Amino acid sequence: MKTLEELKKELLADGIIDAGEVKELEEVLYADGVIDKEEVDFLFELNNVVSGKENAPEWKEFFVKTITSFVLEDETSPGEIDDNEAQYLYEQIKGDGQIDDIEKALLENIKAKSKNFPALLAKLL
Image (cartoon, rainbow, N blue to C red; front, top):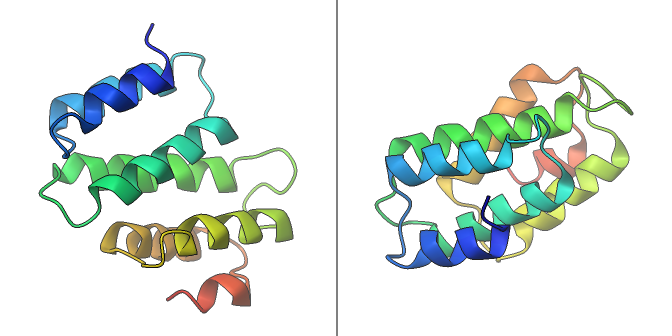
């Protein structure tokens, strides 16, 4: 199994994420059956690098689905966004100084599925 660092190097070699790479990401990240914070950080990092490029549509779907489940299917606050999660998402999305269409899609998906949507995140939309 590749490390996240090895995977990142490979994925970013051509600067875009294609359908095959999304499949590989899914296999590596879901290998242990759970997505942790380090893996979510990794996805945001990847997205910041490939933002605005001709990525496969599967990338957007995977990114949105994975991060939504990380935030809404946790043990601390299932189905809603707690203050820590709101702060974390805000910092990750605001971190590179721009909100791309994938990050907007993520926010809209979380907003649609969550019992609450903190004002901090609403500001990003």
